[in-house]
Amino acid sequence: MRDVAVIGVGCTTFGEKWSESFRDLFIEAGALALEDAHLSGEKIDAMYVGNMSAGRFIEQEHNGALIADYAGMATRHIPSTRVEAACASGGLAFRQAVIAVASGMEDIVVAAGVEKMTDVEPGATTDALAGAADREWEGFVGATFPGLYAMIARDYMHKYSMTREQLAQVAVKNHYNGARNPIAQYQQEITIDTVLRSTMVADPLRLFDCSPITDGAAAVILAPMSRAREFTDTPIKVLATAQASDSIALHDRRDISTLDATVAASQRAFKMAKLTHKDINMVEVHDCFSIAEICAIEDLGFCKKGTAGKFTADGETALGGRIPVNTSGGLKACGHPVGATGIKQVCEIVQQLRGTAGKRQIDGAKIGMTHNVGGTGATVAVHILGRV
Amino acid sequence: MTVARFWRKIPQRYNLIGTKCETCHRHFFPPRTFCPDCRREGKIVDHKFAGKGTVVTFTIIQTAPDQFASHGPYVLAIIKLDEGPQMTSQVVCDPGEAKIGMRVKSTFRRIATDGESGIIHYGTKFMPE
Ligand SMILES: [Zn+2]
Image 1 (cartoon, helix red, strand yellow):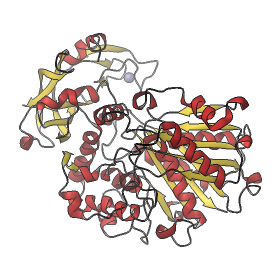
Image 2 (spheres, each protein chain N blue to C red):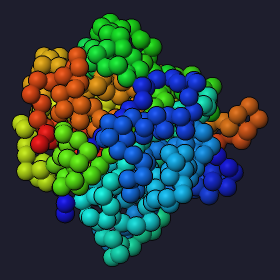
Image 3 (cartoon, chains in turn cyan, orange):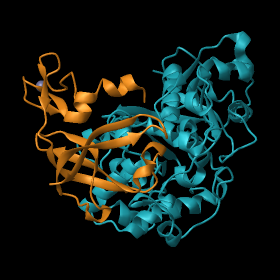
């Protein structure tokens, strides 16, 4: 297998973007990534696009071809493939693109992610998202997405001594980072009180424990490492790509508050990169809900099971902490356009490794990790990226 | 949900008819037609569950989907059935009464309504034993 490098990244601002369409969003992200890689569109050999539910959100399927077409590549007939794994669609699109380049099959490959979520009523958006869980045996009996994560939170808090305030600190920390990220949906800091006084959604989770509904797109461009310096002075090497699956329904898991797919994917990634958690300078984890970040940092191996609440409250995951988590603001503050999230995580780590992350820059960042989850943990993608 | 999609699972939804593997004796609810342990050696047959179990974890849904909105806040739980498997279901009780470890038994109830004039779906919920 060949070594693979990220040579360009681009991301739209995230938010409720009423004036922009699905097509506007991915064109903007793609153009930013091409500009960043000093590349023209004719050089692109293939595309992979992460998208969860354009069929439900804008009643448009067949988005691989649509995106290649509106990116001006219809007459070049490049292969363009949509990848779907609910909220992990972006992470899987990135992995497919890495595999295409590593195999030698393609040279210059775009991995993108896009979601336009605000063109339908909020109820329809929520219902589409519920399709990431088991519709037949979870959704049909009244399970909502926040409800499923709330059951993880209650199981966790029953087994381990995490306080409600410690859980709220996840959102407080992510808003602090979001306030330092110019693309973030929410750029204002909050306090623990903001979280504890927000509306109860699914006990014990409140509105500020939940990531928002977001429009946005992100794109990265990959090349074989041997060619990367034709395009950029700061290629970022893909040190590992890993993916794992688990039962679609939460009730079928070995342990309700451990994402075994996260454990499996991170172990595979560390093995492939020949690294351990101590080598990672910062990580973007999938904090669709505050409890998801607590489980993620434990299941990825950054702290022991049952200790992530205290670890977070002690500032170990903050900017300047032992392992900064979600410097972008995470899904909570940066926003969560589901198909784009996995690609945005790569964009953030690349910026950190290049030293261009501005007010949220981690000094001397050399190696970073991304962690993207589909559903309640039925799909997980983990990637490790490094400066060369 | 179309009538056919609901109708085809009526035995499972109304009467907790799951399956079991006669090779390894593992029980499945929701039903499976393929045993993950025995694979092709597995022999799957229907099995009626007794409908008793224990609450593993739960939440109180405050923000409900439209088809469940008429219920007001409701208790949603993962229940470990005495035969082994775990399932997701509502628990009919005062939200303040719900507890991890609580013993529950199945009960036949209205689950959801498809719009104002749509069909009403019935199925299994649980109540304190
Ligand atoms: Zn068996």
